[in-house]
Length: 209
Image (cartoon, rainbow, N blue to C red; front, side):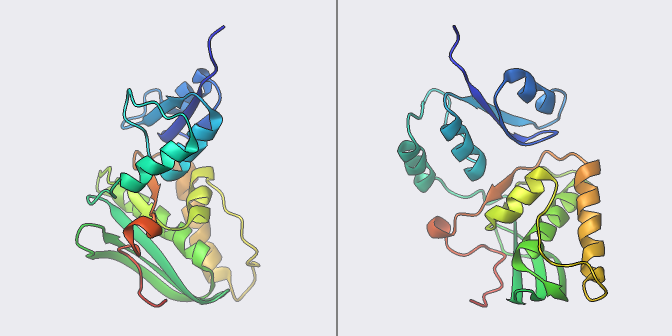
């Protein structure tokens, strides 16, 4: 009996960890720039999916400890987009921006707007970057330091307690556009976690901590 494998899809119709090759194939077959890889355990697959890191072929990882040590040695991709959000209060005055990681040059900025949260800002910033890169026909990866926002983007849905009323309708309209874009578009760009402990603050950081 063949040993069970788990499949990570970083770029495809849907991203995530899949338990069969058939499920994985549905997400990557015919998708330009699809990124995927098999792993011998679900734990390794989940770590690889969250970090955006795929071990070099032939260097089998046998534990999360080994996986982490390789991550510590890794470097961020300079040719990429970095996004970040800032929020005064929770909720509060929120804004976000995106920069070229290599030189920190700002390429888009939104806000500030009332009644936002940091995770909402990060989510909107990631989608903004993906939409902009698709317009430019660019496959540059996108970095965010928000694990929650990255998860929202990958699931194509978000979970926030911000109510929808007159005071937040302006923000919800932007959220609706972002969700609609995610559910009507595909993209080849990797969405990666910025590892602050290893690399310092995101290149898009507002510097207000």
